[in-house]
Image 1: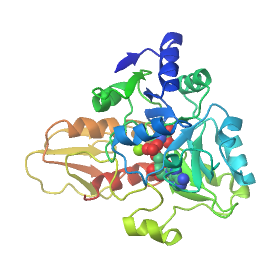
Image 2: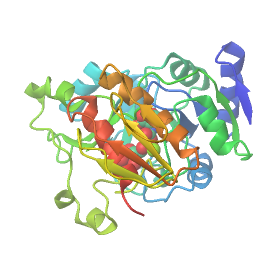
Image 3: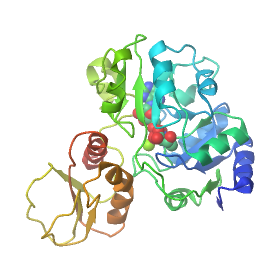
Length: 331
Ligand code: TXA
Ligand code: MG
């Protein structure tokens, strides 16, 4: 696969590949996406194939503008439009009733479609240039750690002929996927995935929200059977190959054998073995930004286990703890 500079030439090569039904690694402000033409059923199928993603896990479609995004929805409740006006472009995904002529696989056969307008300048230029809505899940093999640099993307897919290349725009600013919200029944707001837009920020707009919460299995008994909290939100996800054990925030250092690596929030004295520190200053933004890269580095050390501490459970911390909990869940 090609590694393109995110200049005019690189963006036009990437746009051409997308128009030809190929896949492209696209930088966004959250994580790198594996993008394909959302209107081309074959390209959408090849995203699932390349990622080895189960077909029950719906994709997120990226559009250049709010109008382009909403053009893919069958209807837009006023509360969704309001959230889009406040948070787009940016790391918030809205799940809306879908237009019936879109490829079924896009939304895994659901009646809804997940939409987002990204803020990353290269993603925006690419969307402008190719004039297509782009389906783009995180550019990692299914269940694995999300990619926050172009090297992570080439590391996953360099051998795959369906992936034409990646636009290398350096490290992603947020480092954590978008927050996903839906509107079952119209104006009720349900959070399907914690992410880079903290719940507290959504709640600042609570005058238009009936309520915000993390969706649970009661909403969706069929999902509960598969152990999912909402479509695609599996108990185990974002996981390193090395077993990961998760400790509560501030828990004492457990007794361990050799071959243990550590992931701490602000740095922990007295540890034996390698340690990755999310943010010495205790900055949750920095921690979110470094989370996946730190996990990858530890995962590449050939350790017997990784032990991680939870971070404070507020703001972005809630999303970081969500990812750590899924990464630590047993297969
Ligand atoms: O930040 C992001 O959102 C990144 C970048 C590339 O934009 N993309 C991303 O895509 O995280 P992906 O495929 O890893 O996440 C898709 C998730 C699904 O697993 C599910 O949680 C939610 O989005 N989702 C998509 N469609 C949905 C639907 N119709 N109903 C409920 N949740 C949906
Ligand atoms: Mg993902």
